[in-house]
View 1: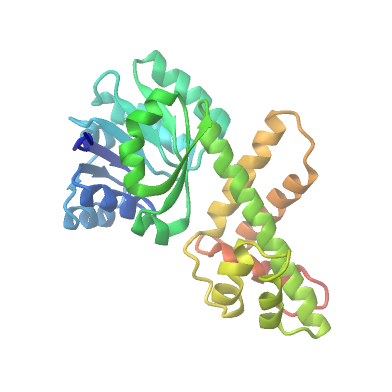
View 2: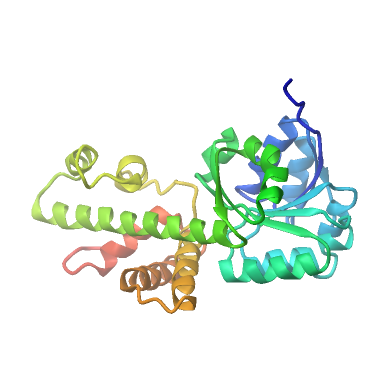
Length: 301
């Protein structure tokens, strides 16, 4: 006999570009969502979707079965849980925290120890797929932590994602997310630099993309970004350059923490960091093409 899904009361902390559509998915599945974000506009949008807007993380966690965080960094996650008006002031002992942010894996390991010493549980479950897949519930979710805790959260994760992977112990989900985005970022730069070089030599950029996509150079950028956002100069993928730079930086930091020499990763982190500084917070990550063009000899800005 199929077990009926359990309706839960959830605290959702972080109602940004990704968090809000994820919270909407949970509401659509019948769960009660109590949400907090520093943006009053985001809280109002949650209310329009049927959620309960709250004035603090502590208020959101009052009466909640689980706390879900979707925030810009591990430091902000820690503050949202353990700081003034933090969620753990209200979450019942034994409660589960599901951190779906992109955080440094070493920080997640430390947070896991701190939460467990206080009688709470934590899994790190970052996502890949962007805003479109957050809206339609087809995110890829990488879940690290104790297996039983991941299983406790599986029903919720399956509402937001179509592919759920157990990655191992605490911090491994965040490690996998950062490493995935390093691979994505490196592939993006390779594809864009190829277009810069080929175009200067006289190749047609759109023809280049067509050939790459039926050849061994095919990757996510050639398939879903070059024509759509780069060659069209619409720069509208929905994923910020600053966030990509942050994730590549996390991957590089993990490599250093493990005493590994990874020159490609180190170079990628430096490049994306410079691009983020040059183009600013509002830039889409596909706009790194503009930075690469500005750095290429003989290519006009």
